[in-house]
Length: 165
Image (cartoon, rainbow, N blue to C red; front, top):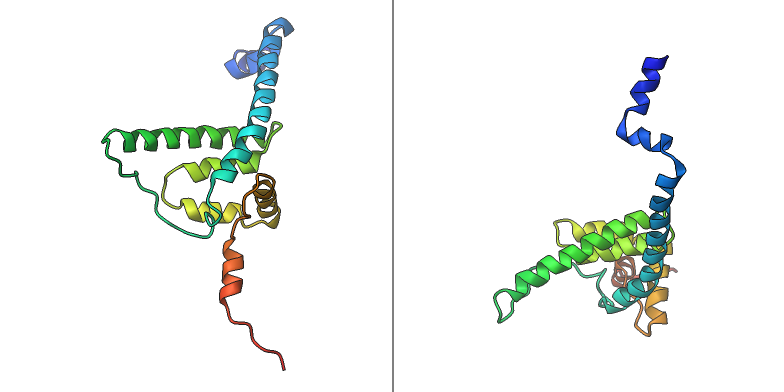
């Protein structure tokens, strides 16, 4: 029995549970503080980023490339910066699924900033739910912008309606 006990106690991950409270308490305080910070920052930044997206962002599928500029270093710099910010927002959104904050919306904004193959398909999958579309449109309207044009609305408007007789 003592051998099994030593096997679990000597593991670094499980050793934390046997640590005295005074060593764990500062870590928990910092995690709580970090959680509050991400919550309040997401309340300010996410609506601003959603309002900056074009109203047809989710209905058009363009390939994102490095923007062409006169300065040769500026395009790759913005490309790297945008992907770095997108990665941070994606990871923060994933954490906000378990912590207070706007997890799904932060993940959507993070993905929209990233550049990778299949990005629009993934965004389409995430924004297909009416509750997510309603939340995104509500934020757009509150910031004084036009609501998004969703692919289902375009498909419904472009198909001819049959007359009922």
